[in-house]
Image 1 (cartoon, rainbow, N blue to C red):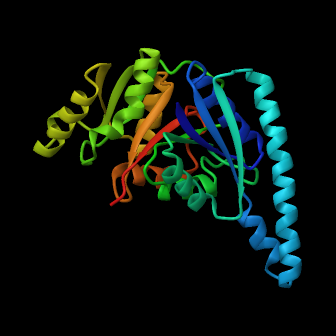
Image 2 (image 1 turned 120 degrees about the vertical axis):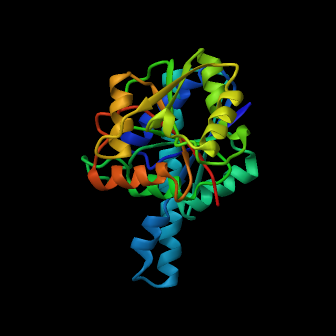
Length: 282
């Protein structure tokens, strides 16, 4: 049975992510942990009141969240009626990142899935602040980021953006392999640059990735750089009609820089596909 954490702030963006992943694993047994953190609300509401009032505020936040959680489970159950899916609601006063990482360790979580932005994020940005924090700090599980704008489609074309410089266990490619096998998808290895410019280390990593994906259909793509790596990859995803974009995230690699570019330049609205992020911690 797969175990998946889906953070929620009860926004339409969060629900879109939940609905997407429920459909994505519609034919599998899955235990979904629907996680709500009210840490931000606690900080905002209790900073200027005494301890007694703070406790009452926290109790109220727990009660309200649990009611919203029950409503959320009834809604998604009503839409899917999938008896192989189990939904469990968890509410916490811990930060979202800390609570997520604790659940990953405690339950052996296979994947975390969340919306690209929450209730309070501005309309013209690519990623909300909570999503950015989870991308930066998640450990030991891949993260699937789902934009609100998408309609569910079978992930038949998977773009795997890589600069071929990261050393990571090939087991980290497991989620990509799983999706590709389940949907008989083609994995497109996307590198911004020319094949002839790869050094010995990059060629080695290319070989390792292809070996790990040998049971899948794999195609290589060498994409000319435009204004930025982010824009180049975005254009490829749009032009080639990709269904999912996979990235290995390390603090100082090209993909991390790509996210900084995307956030600063507010690009990405036309790239309405889920991002599957494989974290590597230095």
